[in-house]
Image (cartoon, rainbow, N blue to C red; front, side, top):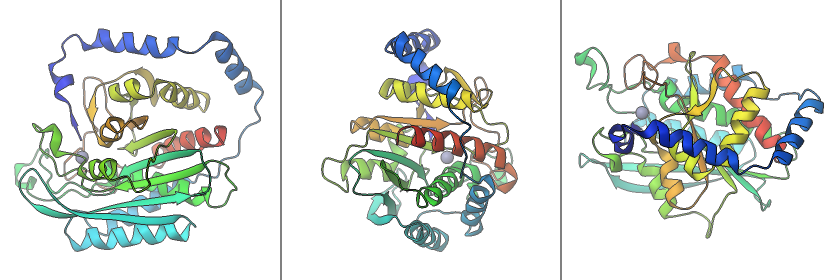
Length: 330
Ligand SMILES: [Zn+2]
């Protein structure tokens, strides 16, 4: 993913962000807020089934295949593993494959993995994360490393690891809401100056929906959700597309004691997989680590994006926020 031109060009965007935020908050009624607060106060402490150790192991398993660059053996084997894992959790798994052309003219085998838990339920929540990793460490401080692929432990595998762990826990419960999972491919073969070069797999998904008229009630993208010092602010396009969901997620995070990590302020505009779904009318938010004045985590698109960059605490926080959101909406 990259930062969009809108963000780069917008000197006065901070004012627009705060306006948007207040517009989103203004849609709620005080009564609804009161009721929510009351429920939060009287609700028993929820038991969590989400295991940060398990999520961490799923991240490590992906990284152990090697960089998941489309067209490589590591990519193929990891895709097979992800598909089998989701089937093992009892999900209905289908794959979308296509040969796509990247910005540099490379033809790559794209493979989106789409899994459905409780496929009979009408109400659907879609969770997604990209499972490919970047072919180049082109942000590495050491130029000699720029041509080598990244491990993508945080940039890619972390979101997938959290979603796999959630899928494991869903499979043990009798949910009335259906959960869909999209492990999207070919997100990270992009170039900084070309907004259209990213998120090729999700664009393909949005243009070739596997189910006619597919429209989940909410969709949540997890990207770079494993760094020890992660900061999740409210991403600009997410706020435009689904302010009520953003309200709910950041409110849940606060109620669970993760308010320092989920900073409830407008962040930047990030060009990521969620933009392709939003264009298709699917209300989507992106939970992504992007720090004010700093940018993405320090290992972004570098050789340092390895397992040393992964924190169980961060994976656990994100997993438990999503788990609680799903339990509340079930
Ligand atoms: Zn990336």
